[in-house]
Length: 181
View (spheres, rainbow, N blue to C red):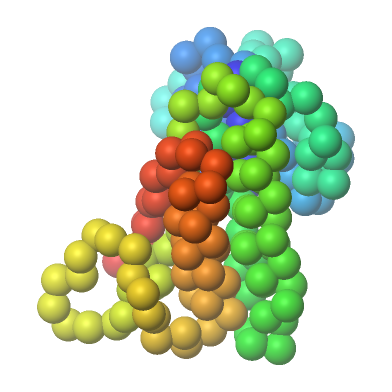
């Protein structure tokens, strides 16, 4: 079973569609889609945009609220954590830190402790966690950032937190940093 957060968003819905098409079971975790209708709609739309249909695969998708994370994750084979609080306003830094760092850490810890068969935790971050510069930016964990907004600050903090947690819990992490060009 693939666990995905952020299935109402661009990356999460595309991944959900792809995994359903492959015949995989998908457990979607959402902060505000208790019935799963928004996730299912976004996944169907993503599949159509990629030229295929998942219309008959709804039974392979289970959506739970982030608050119900205490659900059984024993059978999770990989995690794709795509959800994020997208606020840039520093007045909302506490909300961004709670979602982007706190909930990320909670999810990683839960899966590391209870899903023995989980091979990897994929974390979708942002290209803006690195210091801004005109030259090539190395793909590595950056010890500093420019901290221009609450989104960037909280995503950088989540990367640091996951790197530290991996040392303790051992569940491998891959960080993706998509950017808009």
